[in-house]
Amino acid sequence: MSKVPDKSTANDETLVADSQKGDLEAFEELVARHRDKIYARAFSLMRNEDDALDLSQEAWVKGWQRLSQFQGDSSFVTWMTRIVINLCLDELRKQKRHRLESIEQMEEEVGGVERQMPVVVVNPTENLERAEVRQKIDWALGQLSAAHRTALILHEFEELEYKQIAKVMGCSIGTVMSRLFYARRRMAALMTGQKREE
Image (tube, rainbow, N blue to C red; front, side, top):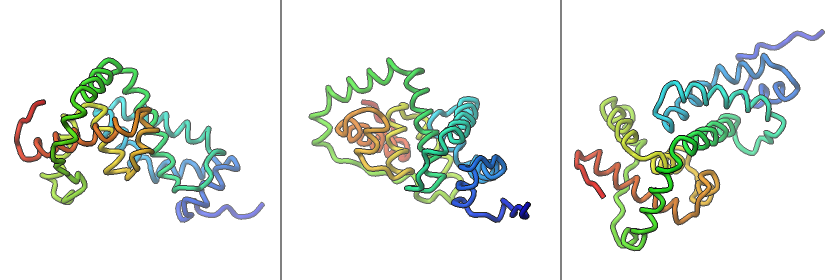
């Protein structure tokens, strides 16, 4: 039997290939490397430690079960991030179905007006090295509705295009644009200490 190489020094691609052959130890190394990022993404969407922990753990289980589907078109951590985002969105839909419907109805009613208004762009990733700013961004994200927060995170942090966000969130591109407009404007108001209510 050949000597087993040290998993901790292997790159993700090698570990994924080994995992796809049934090497659980290789997959455990991938979990150890990326679990913090996957948990952080779950928490940024759910705003609840228990939910984030449950959903990030469920994502790893699904990742292992679906590993044969991973083609390497993106990085492994990006693929896992998509899995946890989809799980979070499913959970948010269950928890807040009525709230999401009312938000979409509101957006449809004021859709014509908002297109004429200036968009205030806030980049949530700017100056993250400053703890005070990072804390304020985190607080402001927590003030957004689930639908608005999700659209903003997918666009600003995951850098998805509108059509990709629409597919993930199960809505139209117009609704994605509307949600991003409101999310950015609300973030701008919160970050500058204003309380602007619609």
